[in-house]
Length: 102
Image 1 (tube, rainbow, N blue to C red):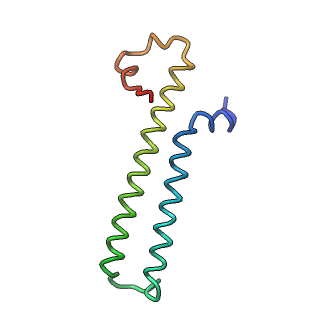
Image 2 (cartoon, one colour; image 1 turned 180 degrees about the vertical axis):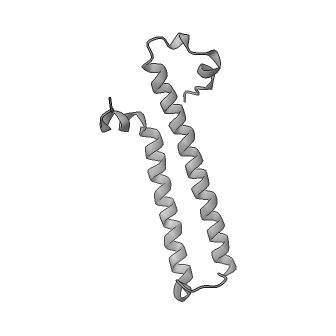
Image 3 (cartoon, one colour; image 1 turned 90 degrees about the horizontal axis):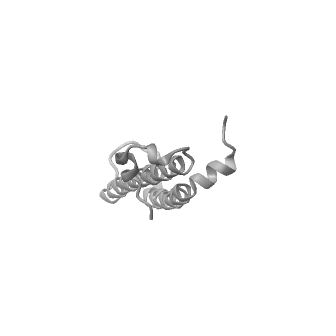
């Protein structure tokens, strides 16, 4: 049985909101990159030191965004499983201890 989108959206609300906000910030970095690259756009060769720093910053930001998304997604999915379990007390203590509720 496949859950409807409304249920999925409510389960992933915090993860989805954070991810959407991070995507906007990453898009801003891409726009800055296009502005800085100017006439060099599409040409092969080494980019300026500033563009190289911008690339590294973008990679770090994308990686952090993805890591945060997965952490929140895991927490929300785990909470959903606990909330909808027939017997949450029957789950191993180590699993219950992994759930961090804000």
